[in-house]
Length: 130
Image 1: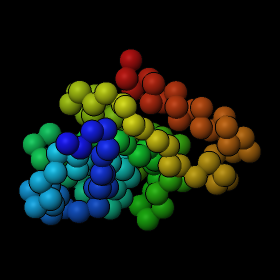
Image 2: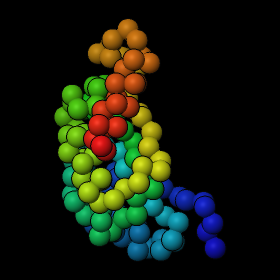
Image 3: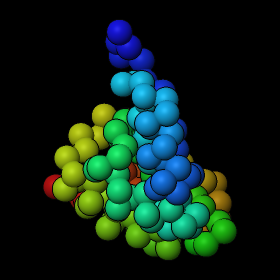
Image 4: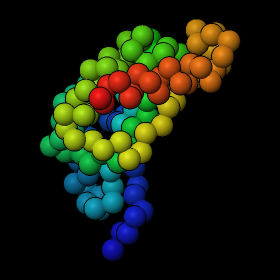
């Protein structure tokens, strides 16, 4: 019995390795914590396409950025295709039980008010799920 305890792995592996990890470990409480930036910035788009088939999603890390610089752009303004990925998660029925922002809001690109930047990203996510 695993109860409410979950063990999450981020999407740093390619799809074959993610599938193997889930098969080898074979625990019901192993799940994926998806990091939006890994799909594009780390070349793991193949994992995103295979998620419904291979991986249970239990959390999402929200951040955007440029290649080689994750977390340094407001959601939707970087290379991560955040809007497209959020829409795909919505289509797959993700319930947003665990979602955390990982943008670096003290970076100059976010402006002088880090809380405003965080609220802007939160609104971006809310709009994606209307």
